[in-house]
Amino acid sequence: MWLFDDLGIDVGYVILGIAGIMFIMIILLIVTMVKNSGLRKKYEMFMDGEDGKNLEKAILDKFAAIDTLEGNVNEIYGNIKAINNQLITAYQKVGLVKYDAFREIGGKLSFVLVLLTADNNGFILNSMHSKEGCYTYTKEVVNGEVFIVLSEEERQALEEAKTNSSLKKLAESNQ
Image (cartoon, rainbow, N blue to C red; front, side):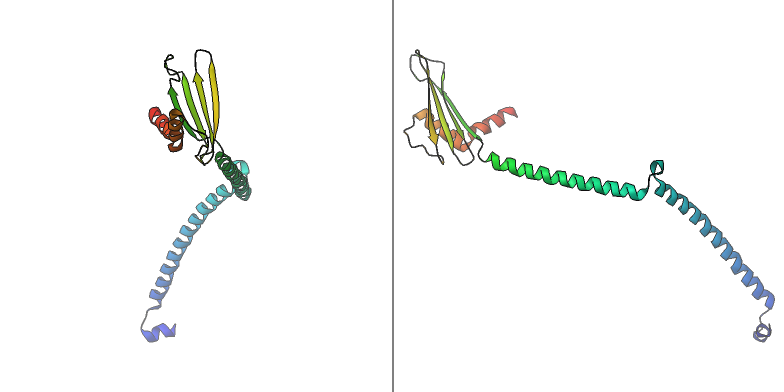
């Protein structure tokens, strides 16, 4: 106490200051305990989950589900690649011209149908309708070329298929 006397400080003020600091510390301790209690309740509720389910198990289950979905996505991606590879050989381009094969028969009952792949490989199907019957002829198309003489209707249908204009017309008519 002699230290405070030498400095000219009353011991009562020192005790009062220390008591004030302790009071503030007790209040801060109580506030911290209340916050900790609320946080602990939230933590326990978070960890318990639904029906006492463990949070760690729930997270592991979700990761397993994600792994399964990732496997499914990879499988679907592989299937799409296979379909795209097969689609190259599928008939994608169509040309169709209806015409009158003979002057005495009207109504445009004859037709030329051209089916081509993306590489312009395919065939020409020419169906000619007459009084005696219906006659069908085919011609092979390789890389967009035919090595047999074509009629005007066959040439027109082949060009239509190569430019894929019939599919464009079909798409436009559906809009």
